[in-house]
Image 1 (cartoon, one colour):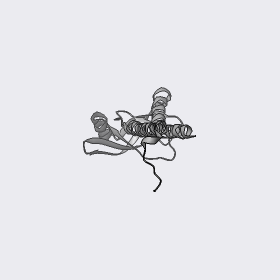
Image 2 (image 1 turned 45 degrees about the vertical axis):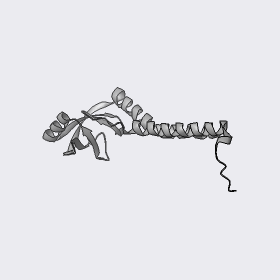
Image 3 (image 1 turned 135 degrees about the horizontal axis):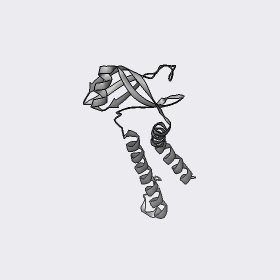
Image 4 (image 1 turned 90 degrees about the horizontal axis):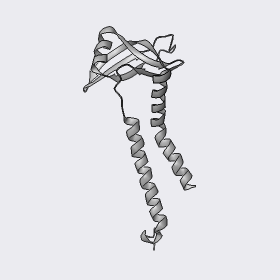
Length: 140
């Protein structure tokens, strides 16, 4: 039962990173390019940020998307009010603007979570193999 719980936790910890990787792959292999309208372009703490909307034909709800992009893409987006975006048909949330600056946040969280789970597994394994080495938790 404990092993099953540990496996479920490993899946849950790694799911965001796996989903992010799968979405990147799908967009790059099955996506198509559109021209998005830039709503705002700003520089913040050395990062170039753009807010944009996809064409209404691709995103009828006209959701606002934000991304950190490289300087060249930022300058072009700011001057032209447009941004080339690759997206999946029918899935406007699965989009990646040209010049996107990648974030490794999901991978860092997944690795940190895996390390914590590995530490818990090692402690549990050690306690099972050496029950006499641990102090008795019962009051005397």
